[in-house]
Amino acid sequence: MMTKANLFFCLLILFLFVMKAFSQSTSSSSANSSSESVSHETIQVDLNGEMKEQHVSGPFQFSEHDDAWMRKRLEDRFLKYVQIDTQSDPLSSTVPSTEKQRVLANVLLEELKSMKGLKNIDMDKYGNVYATLPKNLKRDVLSVGFLAHMDTATEISGFNVTPRVHRNYKDGENLMVDNLKIVDYKIDGKELSKMVGHDIVTASGGTLLGADDKAGVSEIMTAIEFLTEHPSIEHGDIQIGFTIDEEIGKGPHYFDIPKFSAAVAFTVDGGEKGTYNVESFSADLVTIVFTGFNIHPGTSFGRMINSMKVAAKFLDRVNQNMPSPDISKDRDGFVHCLDMNGNVEKTTIRCILRSFEDSELKQYAEGISKVIDQLRSEHSNVTIEMNVVQQYRNMKQVLDKYPFMELSIIDVYSALNMKDIVSVPVRGGTDGSQLSWMGLPTANIFAGGHNFHSQSEFVSLHDMADSVKVIISLAQTLSNVPPLPIKGH
Ligand SMILES: *[C@@H]1O[C@H](CO)[C@@H](O)[C@H](O)[C@H]1NC(C)=O
Ligand SMILES: *[C@@H]1O[C@H](CO)[C@@H](O)[C@H](O)[C@H]1NC(C)=O
Ligand SMILES: [Zn+2]
Image (cartoon, rainbow, N blue to C red; front, side, top):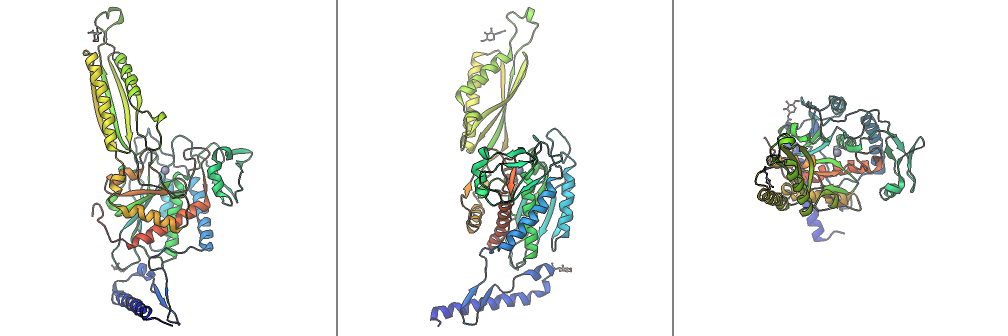
């Protein structure tokens, strides 16, 4: 039985369907192999005249089979990537800071080349890898980027990583390799308890695992592979970027944003499943130089002016008046004096200022300036100079202009039934904070790893599969967003 309203709706859908088919046939001369993958039947009308909608733009429903496929592909990739040492080096003056990052870059290039339908596959002279999965839609939509970094942290070795898969995790278990406790349930139980039944990967002691960020790299690769094999999932141009030297804070410096060609992007470099980051610190560096007067101590009466004495007073007063990192957490900012170098004649102190609010950052600088004024009046014979340099700014100020980015993250996480969806303000900077201010609005989504920069790093293949689904679903959801300008185009 069909009501009048129902009939009208049915006709409307049929009309849209016919229009869609028409537009496909008239533009078929420009249709190339990549656009053969456009899903032709978004709407079906079954024999009873009832309408059935096949995801026009709604989330793709992943099957158990998809899930298992993703875990298998992730495991193959991730275990391969983590065994390639890509540690970056903060003391190096080359780009990339370590040549060995190119080894993974080349592996990724070859893999990308073996996937169907990718374009613009390239490595730039710095070792960054780029590729495009072209849109499978006729209409113009947003070009979306996904980024992960290839290097690993500098504090713990990334050489000779021997990954181990611990199948079907049981609550309360420690993760052991050859009688060595790699992950301690007593410490990490809160996170491990959410992974009962999961396959968890650890290193074997003495090295990093490298889930930061080879989990992200594996997830993007696997999502792209899945999309090439499921052309019915609609998406706009997807730009893929694998970057160098994130761990030494230089990732974006040599990244070619115009070449990347995304209007907005997501770094897949976050921690626990369900978290995302759209906020980071704003950061300034303050350098204070105290200049006194040196002379042989034996003949210094009434003449020597020891710059260190005044510098010590400075540190003391800054500590009394302003919050330091050891007493700050969550949304607190801080003033952190990093180092003090000097002698009688000249002493230099460097302090970093961090806050989620630019206004608070300004207050910290003013506070320091006040302390200096006071010291100047007490020690008119010591010259004190202060210099403030901007380091980076909270990405939120940029991302607030693109509210659909956070909304789509929340949408997609919810559609994938994630509990504990949390926006975590990053108490530091991310590649995203720099990229956002360089003209590419970039939020950060979870890659699933835990205990970053530690020998106890671990990641669940099940959580990684969820990250793959997030990437696919974000690409799909954002295919409903009209195009936005691309920096440099
Ligand atoms: C389609 O492919 C042909 C041959 O490969 C090429 O010359 C043409 O520019 C392509 N058209 C579009 C719209 O991509
Ligand atoms: C420098 O100034 C301090 C504080 O006013 C004073 O105690 C000291 O004698 C001065 N030293 C010289 C060499 O002028
Ligand atoms: Zn990272």
